Amino acid sequence: MDRIQKELIIKDLSKKMVFLVGPRQAGKTWLAKQILKNYSQGVYLNYDNFADRKIIKEAAWRSSTQLLIFDELHKMPQWKNYLKGIYDTKPETQQILVTGSARLGIFRQVGDSLAGRYFTHHLLPFSPAELKNTVYAKDIERFLTRGGFPEPFLAEDPIDAARWRNQYVDSLLRTDIFEFDNIENIKNMQLVFELLKTKVGSPISYKSIAEDINIAPNTVKKYIRILEALYIVFRVTPFAKNIARSLIKEPKLYFFDVGLINGNIGAKLENFVALCLLKHVLAKNDYEGKNYKLHYLRTKDGLEVDFALVNNDKIEQILEVKNSDAALSRSLMLLQKKYSFPATQLVYDLRHERVENNTEVVNLTSYLLALKL
Image (cartoon, rainbow, N blue to C red; front, side):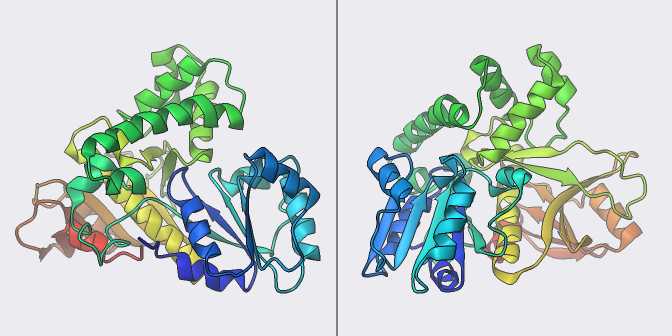
């Protein structure tokens, strides 16, 4: 199954370097190798492979190579300066694709020597919008139970999907995190990870988590930053600009793997919608040059809406997610009335779509199918 970004990446490779980033096992290596088939002379090099590492350090490939693929290159010391040198001295016809499972933003803290030399493409788990031309597009239950990572999602046997998840989590907590940072107490890191799985959709209190585990709040923040950097969780922060009394600052955290969630159907649906909206936002930014962000709304007087799609610091749409309750959300209705935001309530089990009090009540599946990706 081809990923929808394939042709878009090939198009961008003719202009600049391309960074393909996203969670581990989201399909980056597979997609990179599929792209490689379009070139008669190409090289795939993985920094985790010792033989490839030697080739990388010595730049030991032919000048006639049409496509260079570097996988996990961010693990190389001074990788940005190395890549800048390779890019600035390469033959004009040579193209470069770089993939990795850690956020590029983590490395911008020391200056971005690659500025102006690359386009970023985010590869996230499957969504209904990406699979809208397949038999899986409307199978929301499959997304909720298996998550959207290709291997468990496409597995014929659901037991194989569960086995994949066990190995995936073990690899994340025992290998990837240690490679990224020196964690002194892996047990505490695991406890934070497990607690977060129960807090999806709720504002995160670092102090509360710290008290539960008996560690410092700054340690909790550090652990969560690492989980974000490795594309395990993502943060949705409250939108406050021009919203009176919207002063509560705690972020909400969601998982890239929806199958990890410990919670009821409501928590799983909210996480799934958050992931689909994030994918939509990143696609708008990556492919249309927009400045979209995903936030939520919560005021001190108790009004809260699950999500706000924001473009250039202006809210385009506020959204509330429901499982089967078609009754209009009070917070959604009041915030729409006060600020005239376009408002939509997404309902998973909905018989009839309608407009009520200037707010659309729509089928959740239909809405997700219509997103950018």
